[in-house]
Image (cartoon, rainbow, N blue to C red; front, side, top):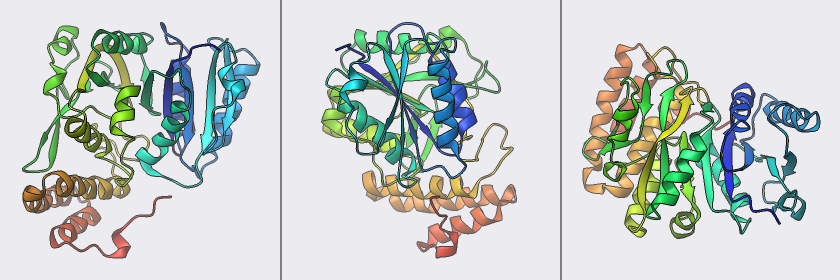
Length: 342
């Protein structure tokens, strides 16, 4: 049986074009081989079929860079088949959920499949709206192998539209206001600058690229699924620090990942050019949920601070989000303001 002990999990929701571009970059990775699992989160735009046809065509017609890959279609609760594990090479798997499970729920489907492979050592969780540098995976593996204390390792996230500008290398959480701050966010990329960051001082890594050690998963468990969108990784890392303090956050500066931020939700903070009430709703409610869970004595301050978010939305003429913020401060949200998950 071949030892393909790295799995890459890519979550898709109504974003076939982005997912295909991401896959094209993944098959060009240098260094260790990896299996890829694409989890389609109950897309409504035909994404599953589009992605499936693309993978099959690339594999069967031996498109450049796809040599050695095999295609497997999984059911949501299916075990990895012996044929998948005994291919003698890498595989690209595709699974479709029965409903939109949110970010954590969709990713966890792929994690569960990967965990059924006893040889699996690392899982790389990637947003589908990313394109990776050819050395990105190699840098992550080197970092993890150099320090067994690292439970999760992050990449240098650069804006896809402005590849010389840093989106984040991780971040800091302000428990008094319930706000996050991306470290090095909006600064010009420089290798020396990124190498100066001590990941042990970070509160979180950005979920667009998370490289996870199996032992951390077995100790801490899967991503929390009750957020649906936003704060999942913040909760995960906070839980890790509480119940498995032997694990730390890590950061591989040489692992470069280009992120089309917000493409999967319809929101993009690059210049605040687009707006998505769907994304805004979960951004506001998730930060309150996290605060109430881990910092209950500061929850009321965070709830009051939501008013500041509302005023900010009012300035942008995002009136529905402004009214939502008022309702959240009051503590009651009408059903009409709660978006569906489809």
